[in-house]
Length: 245
Image (cartoon, rainbow, N blue to C red; front, top):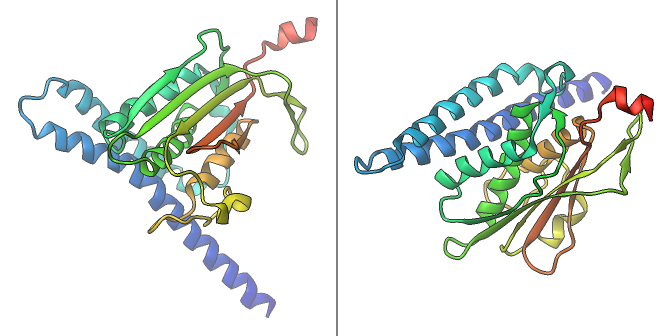
C-alpha cells in the first residue's frame, strides 16, 4: 500500500507539473497571438511595439521551459534590484495589446517607492497571472482595472529559518468584475481551486509561491464590488546602512 501511495503521489506531481507548465505557457501565447492578429493590419502604426511583444513573450516561453526542472525552487542568485513599476508597466503593456485589449487600465503609482530585490521574470510571471485573471473577469465592454502602488508600513512577515522582513511596498490590483465566488474564498490560493470553466486552478497558487519566495505575501482584499488583490513585498535595504542604525 505504501508503494502504491508513493506511486500515486508521484503521478499526481508529474500531472500537476505538466498542468502548471501548460498554464504558464498559455499566458505569453495569448499576448503573441493578440499582437500577431493586430500585425495583420498593414496600416497599424505601432508595429515595432507589437513585434517587441512577440519577441519578448517568445523569450519568456523559452525561459519557462528552461525552468521546468526548477519549478519547485527559486534561486536567489538571480535576484537583483528592481523597480516594481518597470514590472507592472511591462505586464500592462503586454496585456493591453493582447488578452486585456478590451480593458481600460488606470494607474496610481507612488514615485517615491524604493527598489525591491527579486527575479524580474518571476515577478512578470506572477503579475501576468493577476492581470489575466482580472481581465477575464470583467465584461467585454466597460471593463476596468485599477493598479496602485503605495508605501505601506506596519506589517512584518517571517518564515521558518529567515529573519523578519518589513513589507513596506504594496501593490493593489482591483477590477470591476463580479468578484470572487464565495465557494472558493477559503482556499483561493490552493492549487486546483477554481470556478472558471476550463481553468486549471494553478494561477493564484503560482502567484502565491512566487511572492512568498520574494519574502512577501498576497491577500484578497474584502471589497464591496469586484475583486482586489494586494501584494506586499519588502523593499531593498542597504545592509551597510542597516548595520549602522
